[in-house]
Image 1 (cartoon, rainbow, N blue to C red):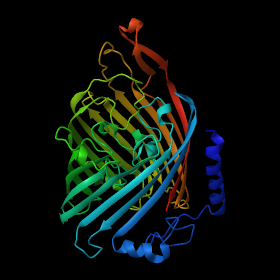
Image 2: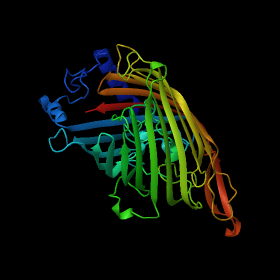
Image 3: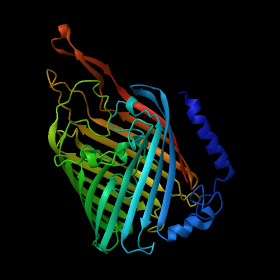
Image 4: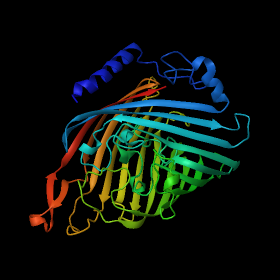
Length: 451
């Protein structure tokens, strides 16, 4: 696909909207759905007052479409440009506001993606367009990753059960500057969550858990414990894959801090699974080996940590300012190919008074890769190397509901070579076909519509 076919329409929209109303971004804090076409938080507005009315009664519906045009302009496996997108719908119900009973919350999410991404063309294990990984790669897939119910039995304690999307807007290795599905912050998978958890944790899976809120405010402190299926899939119910030999146990705690009088958070978590894994399972690039079997091993564990800390905050509690973030993670190293992980960077939100909805980020990540073991004669072959990458983005809020993000990434992928395993001379021994893969430079534009 030609670059002009992707970039041209996005630049046209950017120029038209930015030129028409460059300063109109800030929607009403009391009623974000209200306001004129330029200032309200969503494209479709308040639906004649209905949206605000049902929100006051505990029913909210959030809809977004994220489109990405992205190309490998140097290095990697393939320099072609790709265009793809993802639509997401989230429904939340509050039983107390509905007048039924207090403390009950229902969450439902469905999403679908289309077309393709450059993820398989970079030579990296981490997706450079993580939005296209959901609900599943490579595209043209629809799924229901979440339908779950939480009941708080007291202000300090709740129970939850159902199917969970383990990466959401406000949970799952949460970080104020580097988190999500690649639709509003960083696009690289490694800068949105800790990849040491990805081998053991399906994106969408059945489970049950306990939530503990020691201070009665989940924004201050929350501790969670979950037991989940290790065989989850967003395109199935999950019940057919329940298996006592494929279970994961996860615990995570997050606390708000006030160092230097500025907002920050500290998070610590750990996961254990008894499932039988190979080193390249779940959401990672499976083109490392074009064919040939990897040796499996039963059981995997990981420990992870992250923090975010504002260094400049014009007003406490308004979610604006500039800060730093960092993630660390360690795993068993076998079967988990991510033996050690680290990322750090700088993030900012609304640093200009006239542009309160803009975001930016600069981030770097490093993965110490443990090579998978190949069955047969090639057990000592090293297929992978350590991976590292850099990303910079600026998210222009043309309006609060129309967000345009130029993005650049430089990634030295773990795939040093593209390896095909075949028959050797006379078919007696396996043979290797190896193609070298260089450091990739990836440019992209992302356009998000909030309905």
